[in-house]
Length: 116
Image 1 (spheres, rainbow, N blue to C red):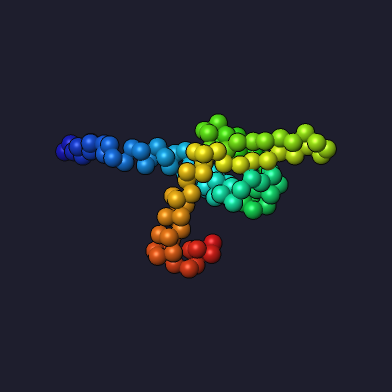
Image 2: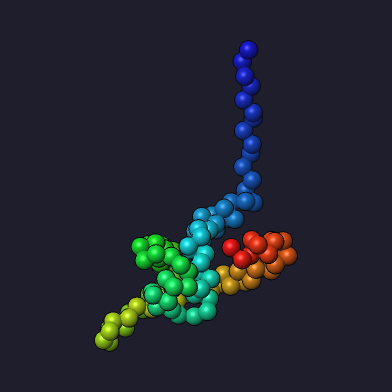
């Protein structure tokens, strides 16, 4: 008895922009960094403390976000040397998206999930 394979579904073209967007910003650490930088420019150690990411992860995420055009890096060469990170216009354009996610979470997620 031969098993029947299900017919392949046609791809839903309307989901492609959503999926492509989530592939760029959808990781836990990318979202955390982007959200923290909405409050303004921060130094590496400030981001490390506020996101809870380890140094290696944070460095990789900041590099990735920089390459994708969401974050820019500024280095002050005065003693001591300081590196600052901030959102580009592309990164700042995500603020309404974060606001909508927070609104949705307030309506649909249980308090225990919000505290995690």
